[in-house]
View 1 (cartoon, chains in turn red, blue):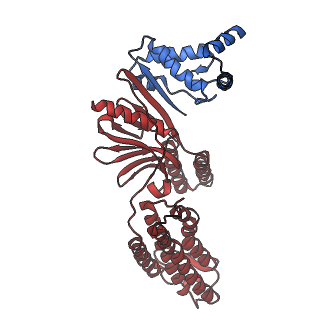
View 2 (tube, rainbow over the protein chains, first blue to last red):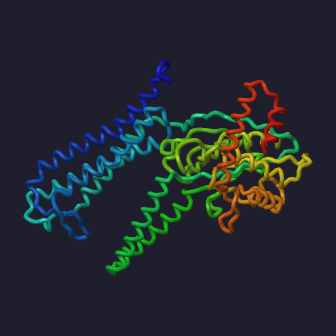
View 3 (tube, one colour):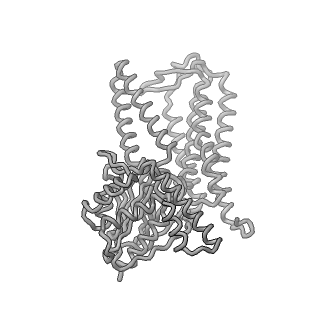
Length: 334
Length: 117
């Protein structure tokens, strides 16, 4: 525990994150909801909810607006409050926290302004079809949203990625000894199940669109299914190999691929990886200073190149892999 | 599932036997569990800088001992027999500890084990 030696900046970053990502969006969303609920009795029901170039072309219950405001304005914030904030409190750091917080506050500002404006401009109308253009509401919402995101970004400090080092192992290699370490990084069962369910749902959507003759929608669903399958293939599994040539990470089909030749290895160690904080999510990810093959949270092999760019792979038994690579790199220099 | 395999080219033991011994050791200590797939022979061969047939020879040796199943398309899979072997390893560890506590010499214990077989 570090309670005896508290770092003042540690909680300050979490507090600022809470203000930007949770408190401000909550205040904006509540204010927007209060205004909308006050105006709702004066608006037509159904109310205009969709516009084409010339005017409103679709309508819905006037409760649509407060509901969308709630979900858009506080959905991401609620998720960050539940997942990112506890991790920040525990000391996790990463550029993605800053990005996600700015996105959350920008999103809620956009939702609050454009949704409330859409409700306000339809007060006193006899029918939804009399609604004026929605363009001013959207444009103002975008400007305010981007402004809020920028302010949120500037309020939060720049965070370098920090990793917690894990216990290391030691391997001694005789001059005549040859060794290889082979491991595979796998996504958690939950993640694999989620991806498969998503693919099945999207494919079912494509079939439904096909049977109802909506071919444009069918192609969109099909494209999405192909994209998800490609994503699944690259994020479910990766093979890792450490030998006298260095380290290589390969996707299931031999692609994507990333390697560090033994002559370029500066150091190798075992670290703890926080997918969201350090890399902004899962998969093959390039962030400032590192390339990550992040298929799950937890232990990972980190290989520092001599020119500074690191390769990080979330793989079990990473201490053994790091020890072998260190021993091989040391011998290659002799 | 991960696997560290090392061989010594200065050793008099054949390379295939060294590869088999490295994998066998991980099966017996329980680091490789039944159902685990051994790494593709091609990857082991290129990683160690040995001929592919050397590694396949090692895998066949392990199959003949009943420790792995070789199936086309699925590669080499550790069998249920490995669990029994790992259990034996635990018994041996216990036996060693008890014999040491009783002050018996390793040679005596080996002689007793040999007599029991």
